Image (cartoon, rainbow, N blue to C red; front, side, top):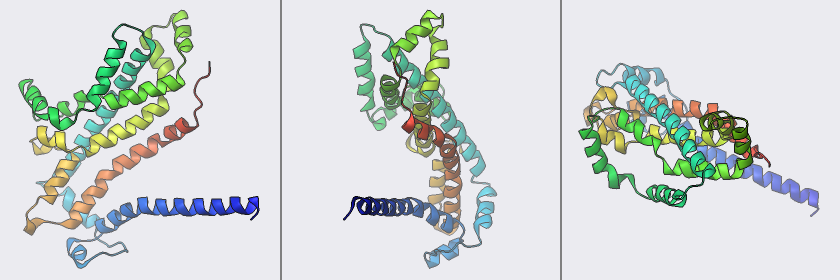
Length: 281
């Protein structure tokens, strides 16, 4: 077989594998959309590959359910996830910049300490965290879901690794010689270089916060402060007589729309991060 034929065969195989993987990824979204367009009675009859006519009916049921504040829950999740992504990425990048640029005696100890926190499960500290926020008067509030995101060891390590690969120290020293203070250097020079890394971690942090169930369920009690995962769990926990599968699928469909929008908005920065060659000395 000639080289040209081998390359063509490899291209065909690669495209076939990509098509199969794309189908596997998108199939579940298709099923979700199809189920959201059917009523509870239609879903009880079995799976249908064709869309139904009950999408707007299901949306109306969810939106007009007085015991189920869907739009309030989406707003709460947007507030929590948006602030969490912004605070987490900015302060993690700032911490990584500080440890990367400055040399001090406890630098290695501080780095090791941050990474040690990374392996500590959230469930281990949950009771102490709950007691702390209760004593601080923040129980049943959205603040405990946002403020702890300032300290994120996983995001910090990603940012630190990215700085090692992309930021030459000579660039920082040149800015200092030009009279730029540290915060100005970070905000105007370092942050633009870190855009791809920030975009990637912003997506991961936003999605992680949006899908977080454990901490909100531990902290939030009022219905008007519940986030989307808790509200979906409330629907799933409804008694048999009021259980509506169409309503649940519709709520899940609505819940993933903001995630898709955030991904589409930031995906160009992820692609830029793949092609970015970094700053050369």
